[in-house]
Image (cartoon, rainbow, N blue to C red; front, top):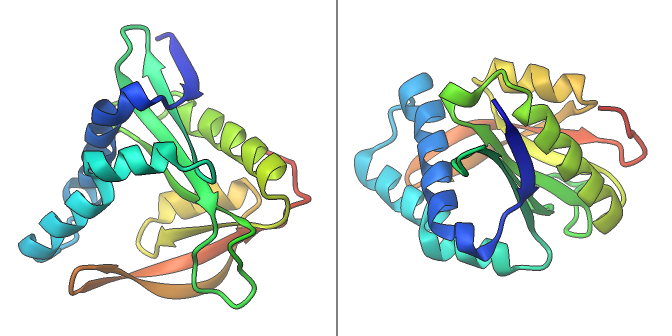
Length: 181
């Protein structure tokens, strides 16, 4: 399969919104079966993955998003980064955060995640030198292992709100001088 990694464009807003929502559902609803209350889930999905939210993220110069697409132009995976907003005493908004790195289930294992991680880390190193942060669900051992291999270490925990539901999340950090991937 021929894949292209490229920056997301404003013309990708609708397709990226669908990709983000689908990847979230495949991971947390279908994969981990997290029992989010339906009303809370619906509100979270709209606020996090709605077209208006995705358009605002793409328009924000402090954020960057890349997509992986197949030869037909279908979006299969994405990475989204920007200023750190995690609740950790050593984190600050002038440091970078990997907000999201997702691939559709059918596209996993094809190297897209690693390629997206590399472009995201390169961008953050240039735009926000210093530590890079991320939050990962405590039950996602596979993602934690991937981040560990990329030089991230667990440095804290916090509650991630999905309406009245709280996911138990881990905070990971990677030293800004670590250029290995």
